[in-house]
Image 1 (cartoon, helix red, strand yellow):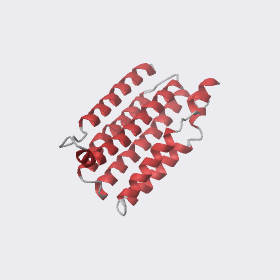
Image 2 (spheres, rainbow, N blue to C red):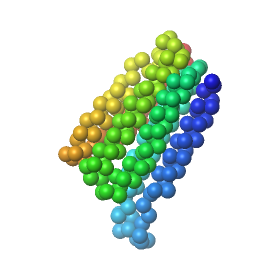
Image 3 (cartoon, one colour):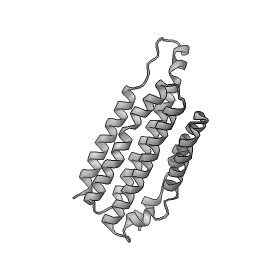
Image 4 (tube, rainbow, N blue to C red):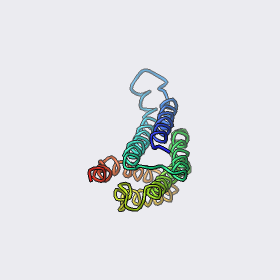
Length: 191
């Protein structure tokens, strides 16, 4: 199977996820700045979720560009990732509607953690499909950011029950960590 079909399908699903998120944005009930302040938390939740989805989309593109082959296992691993990403709009809305309290913030973190684990599984499936000496294998052999993200999400999940705001800070920290351009795939492609 060609990777182009997998990439096109994934791009479409991610575009729908972002569209759903923007449709869920709360609208101000007035036309003044005070009305905007009431929806600010929802806007901030949207910005965080949009950034995280965008990071996955960007890195997904680079990762597939480093591959030559896609296997059936990689297709299922990709669907697994898309499943968890599709829950981001739901948990974002849940978190906003419940004023960022413990259980919704933990649910959001659980989806982020599951997405991160699904990402790592997709990497391994693509490495199996392309071989241990492939460009993809060389690009992700020391995936410090991927593993660190999983650790931070796991920690944030537990912290959510004590201090939900601290969990949100950790979710933002992971996003900021990934906003720094990841040159591993570009280096692997340049070889």
